[in-house]
Image (cartoon, rainbow, N blue to C red; front, side):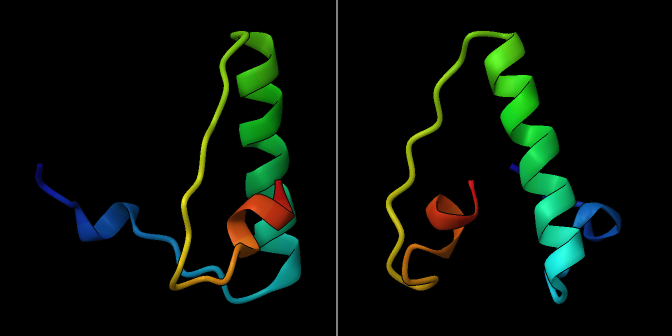
Length: 50
């Protein structure tokens, strides 16, 4: 898997996090998909944001 540095987003501010998680949540619901997280480094912040 190649990671393109142009597509890396630094989640530094609350507005960015809220916008991205809202868009992701809407897409998951529209496509009837689920997302599972297992976080240790972030302390559950991704799951909490969603």
